Image (tube, rainbow, N blue to C red; front, side):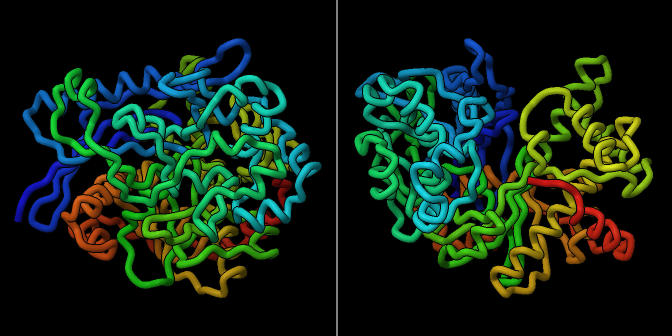
Length: 491
């Protein structure tokens, strides 16, 4: 069997990586070639992404691959959703793109619903209502920067934008487009009705391509700068969760997935979107997956709260590793204090330990006093939210879920994985940690004809990476904690 090499440019809200993958003899291996921090920058009081620095870091990674003498046949970028870059003609960027946590979309839902009813937006898109969604960012552009929006001739979400810089082909890949809340997930295209009702210029909406579309060769100038020759740029699943779900090593139907990272994305894979009043009332989302499947899921605030706590402690001279924090949490008393991770106060950056303490005090619970107690509180609360979300999925779909597959960086948190099993009452399978990069690269293999089907892709993942299994424990005390959790103020 031939050996093929692929490159994944995997962009997260905390870091970015260039990964090298190798497919040989029915197994897949990968190696991290280059990692860099990816944090928003503050400009003029607004929160932005330094996408040109990101692009330079990615080229550094490509250069390191080329220096090894490796011939990569494909390259693709995946990223978080909703944020975008505005372009005009050959001008590569009109303004520095906003970060989704910028305050410009505060109150965006209410303003949008005053123009178009929420039920119509959901009927068109099936997308969870979050003020960070691309729709509300574009409405902020329309109202606060109308000249910029009129001058632009297209927008591209971040993963697609990097693929454009690599290939020169400006396309929107379906999995990433589906996160915008302007994409009709039933018809697999932009919603002209929402464009018209919100008075958004049709010209800025790029052509959409399906997951696994070959865009073309790496631009000659980039190939020359990096020394990387012969690679095809491929729009795999440009949305990181779409790529991760494609690589979930599951079989059968009675399973849920959790893509665990800065955000926790918990859901199931279906053939068609589930758009009805019940799914809307539970605030589920229908995003497109590989092969025009639907990722029926909920976006949950994930390890962001822990990440922010760690940043705050580091500023105060307490620089803990994640491994140290998990160990300290394991030594703390169980289920002493819990929070609702989706409470609005936890969505924005800034003094997260104090926000957790204030929440516990306001709800009449013991206030965590040590980093271990804070981390245990956050992890146990996330696990309880996972359990609640799985029960909601079962209510909407009528399915009985028997397993939870956890993929992504959060899968390294063994304590959280065990808590998830305890809270949900189902078996948890953790791994692979690098599901996003794996999905990205194995979809490249499908696009280039090196694999034959999505089923074969998942069998390659099962054959190539270790999976750790966690069984439920202490179910009685977790059942009591779930009753406490239900009474906490959330959204």
